[in-house]
Length: 551
Image (cartoon, rainbow, N blue to C red; front, side):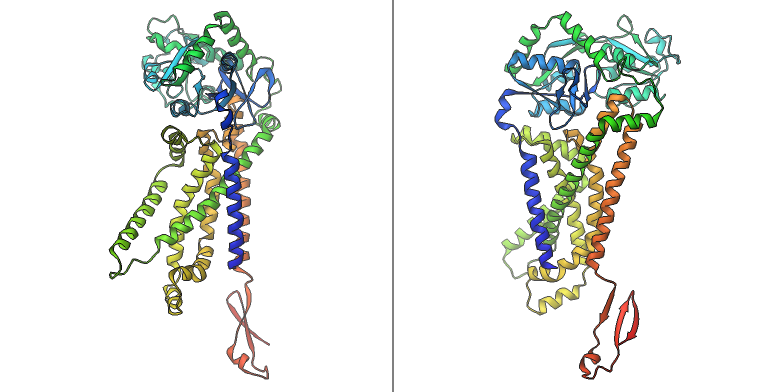
């Protein structure tokens, strides 16, 4: 048993090292020649993701997807003009500004308005597009004849989080404002499903939505005198790190060479090239089953790759977390120094216990998503440590799991009968010898179900790592859902995939428990029979707790 555990430990450490080396590798030597541009890749016609490189799409960093749209075209022109290689980093809207501030991104080209609030944290270039405000409503609905904000009186409305659009909803008389949504695709789905009655967006977004969804119509609010919008809010510009004047000036120079007519032509082309533009909308739509089949056909490989990343993160993170939890759990059970010992030793003991308790409480008491954001962006802005998304993912899952496993190990150790520890000490064993040879082998079997629970939890919880651009299963599903505005179908697919992964892992862990437990049929040693040289005394066997008498 001991040798088997040692072999497993060596294998796990080798796996961890290989995974860490692979995840930590990046193009650090070529970084000066790269323009790392962040965008949602889920915001047509400005940017979207697709499965192929059609229409000049650019491959997304750390993914097998491609990005296209007006922002991508503009980013490519800027990269060419500045002599850099373009690298698209797909990032959720809430992570774009922190990415620039921390230095993880060189620039954000994502249809971002140059508002006064944002200017306090990042610098903006000259505008690369100037938008006007539009409303989106359902065709034939309650507000189909609306022309102004006043006509939208009492509408149930919403828009995207952290945008000027959402702030402008307060100007609609009697508006029933719903919580802000994460991205444009979820906004469109909300409107189509009847969850809201009106959306506020900019002109390109409205035109693209109507172009792809014939059940929607737009309302031009640009001439509405009741709509008060600061001029700066209409300027869509490139965000760069504050104080990076060299990059800002080079981008401004590149933008100056792009005429207004060329910009309009690029936007029109983006609207026509978006995934659900005219000519690309299937005529034989047969409902949800049709879209599930279409997504599996076009994104099936990406779903499988995302599932592979999810499993890798969960397995490696759980294994490293178990090692961390084992070390912390054992250290938490070290006996207190005797009164006659050195006072310095007592201080070290209490300091160690305080630090271990703080680690456990902090990582058990904060969400993994918050930990990921703090580690990924904070490590760059504070320590200038540029982690790849995968390495950061491994690290977060591991230390998070370790905090939970530490308490499981401590509980497992304390559940072993104290008499065994006393017996080991009576035989002259030290604390560490007692742990290694008596307590820990039993503890491992006791906590094995909890290890399985943590693995299942990690398979599901890795979905939060999409906030730092880890290309796990949820990340890929969100891309497919955003392209086709089919959230129910996309997430139904990954529900099945998640269930298969968790079910198979739980069955394998149950099989491991049975292997460790051994056979349920065994023979009890009878001292009288051993002492009888004639073998006439009956032996006893036990199965399932019932004694049987036989030869």
